[in-house]
Amino acid sequence: MSSEYIVYKSDISYFSGKLEAFLRYKGIPYEAVECGRAEMRRIAIATGIQKMPAVELRDGRWLYDSTPTLAWFEERHPEPSTVPEDPALAFLALLVEDYGDEWLWRPAMWWRWVPIASRRAVGYRIGRAFAPRPLASVLSWLFGARQRREWLWGDGVHRGNEAAVRDMLLRELEFLEDVFARRPFLLGNRPTAADFGYFASMFRHFGNDPDPAEVVRREAPRTYEWLARVWNPPGERAAPAVWQWPEIEVWRPLLERICGDYLPYLHQNALAFREGRKRFDYRGAHLAFEGTQTTHYRVYCRERLQQQYGSLDEDARTHLEEMFAGVGGLEILLRDGTIASGLADRFHLPQEAVGDAASVRGIWGQARN
Ligand SMILES: N[C@@H](CCC(=O)N[C@@H](CS)C(=O)NCC(=O)O)C(=O)O
Image 1 (spheres, protein in one colour):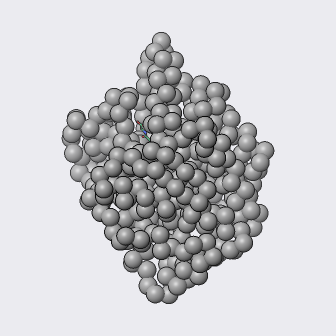
Image 2 (cartoon, rainbow, N blue to C red; image 1 turned 120 degrees about the horizontal axis):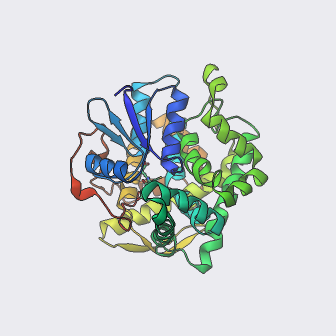
Image 3 (cartoon, helix red, strand yellow; image 1 turned 60 degrees about the vertical axis):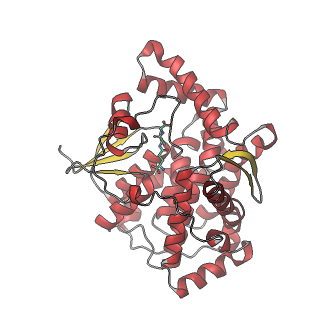
C-alpha cells in the first residue's frame, strides 16, 4: 500500500466528489479506487454499509460516511483549516453541510433520473461499472427505476409536488449566485464544510449530468466557476483565511429553507422514528411529501447537529439566535429534545473492519444514506 489512505469512490458519486474535493484542498495524498461490484462488496463487508465513499487506512481500519470522515481528517490534518475560528460560524458551516448532503439529495435524484438524457448517460456509466457490456443497458434501466422508486415516487413525490422538487435547484442557484457575487466561497476566502456540503450535489449531479449542467451554466455561471474553484483551489489555500459572517439579506432564502423545511423535516422524521412509523406525512413551509420514508440515518444527523449546538457557549448561541431570529429561530432543532438514533457509535471513526458478508446487498436493497 503506497499511500496512507485508499479512497473507494466513483466519479459520478455525490458524496465521493465531496470527500475528494476536501482531500485535494487539504493537500492530503490518497490512492483512488473506482468502485465496481467487487469494491462495493468489499466496502459492505468491511464497514457494514454498502455505500461509497469509504476510506481504508493502512492499519486496516475504515472511515465511512462523508461527514464524520471530513471531521476525522480535519482533526488529523488541521492545515489549511476548513473550520472558522468563530464557533457560531463553524456551527453554521456544519448545518449547511448537513442541509446540502441530505436536503438536496432529492432534487439531485430528480435531475439525474427523470430527464431522459441524464438518466441514459449516467445510467449507462453505472451499468458499465457494475456489469459486462451486454448487460450494462439492462442494469442501467433497472438502476434508474430503483432510484426513482426509492427516492422519488416511493418517497412522497408525485405529480402535484414534482415541479417544486425540480425547482429546488433553481432556488439554490439564485442563492449561490448572490453569494459568489460577493466572495469566492460561502463563508469567506476559503472553503468550509458548508462549501463541501453544497459541492456534493452541485459538482457530481447538477454541474455534471447533461440536463441540469446546462441549467447551471446558463442560470448560474458564478456557481459553475465556484465548482472549479473548490475542485482546484491552490491560490485560496495560500491566502490567510478571512472568514465572513453571512449578510442576512443574501442568506435569508437559505436560512428560511433550513428553518422552514429542513429542520422541520428532521424533526418530523425523528418523531416518526421514535413512534416506529415507517412513513410519515411531511409538511414544511415550501414543500410537502405524503408518505415519505422514515430515514434512520437522518435521526442521527439531527442528533449530531443537536450535540454540536449543545457544545456552543452562550455567546455563540446568542449570535446564531440573532441570525435565525427573522426566519423562525433554531428552536425546531431542539424541539422534543434528543431522539436517540442509536447510531452514534457506528459513526465514531475509524472503525475496525466488521467482516460481515450479510451486509452485501443486491441492486434493490440499499441503506437510506
Ligand atoms: N451519508 C453517506 C452517504 C453515501 C452515499 O449515499 N453514497 C452513494 C453514492 S453517492 C452510494 O454509495 N450508493 C450506493 C447505492 O445506491 O446502492 C455519506 O455522507 O457518505
